[in-house]
Amino acid sequence: LEITEVDTSQVLHCVVGPVEIDGDAHDWLQYRGRDWEALAQDRWVALGRRHLLGAVGGSVDIQLTFRDARGEASDGLADVCEIVHFEYASKCSPANTVFLNVFDLASAMSI
Image (cartoon, rainbow, N blue to C red; front, side, top):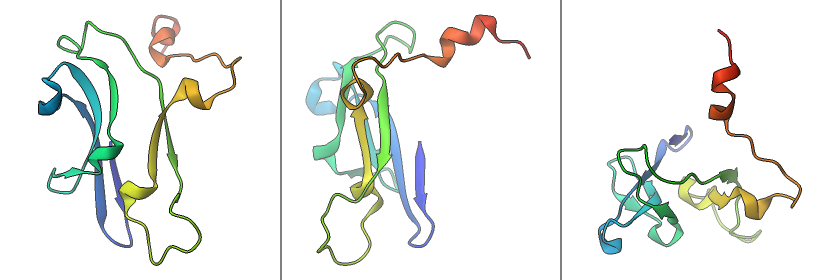
């Protein structure tokens, strides 16, 4: 996922993959800059065990929100990676929420 702030030309790449410090055991949601440099590593999210070729493994529902959590006294514009927030969808939703994966509908879909 690429998020671009038009006024400042900031680019944030949100990618999923392993990290070296984890021993490549888990997939992580990572923030990367325009040149793919690591950004805001303290905000990376562990998503679970690594998938085998994208076919074998679990799935995780996450929610993307944009909010400036710096407070009212903040000066200037926030960096894109400061206003992007990923959270587990199940933690952000009411207990009676039913999540529907679009792939669950694929067999019933007609084009």
